[in-house]
Amino acid sequence: MPTEEGFHQTWYVDSSVILRALLGDSPAARAWFTQAWANHDRFVGSRLTEVEVYRTIAKAGQHPSQARPYLGKFTLLLIDPVVDDAIALQQRLAAGDAIHIATAQTLGPKTVAIVTHDLQMAKAATQIGFTVVDPVTDDPGCTPVA
Image (cartoon, rainbow, N blue to C red; front, side):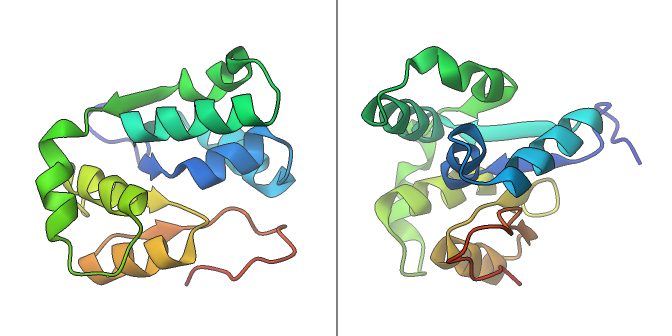
């Protein structure tokens, strides 16, 4: 059912999923994006997502424009206001994951679901009350997020 903003679902997407779809490592992640685009879902990330995606693309020897078909569909939130919240999180998380979760918290667990392939981030987000989805089901090392 569409929300009042006209979106079916709002997803906070971690760069791990974007990169697996973008770099062709996961047809399942790419198919998930295709379906979500068809559903007119809303995609949210942080400026950290943008940095992680562009830096990884450059490291892989690809031009930054390769990321635009994905990142161009995102609303990217500023991270300055959430740095203190990221520091305060009780869960054991890498710095980037803490910033992602703190940024998603600005929208709230009832408003946004988190999409990640990072098991530690998924566990922490679930503990806080977020719905978590891992569409990267075709990764040979995949430990599905429950």
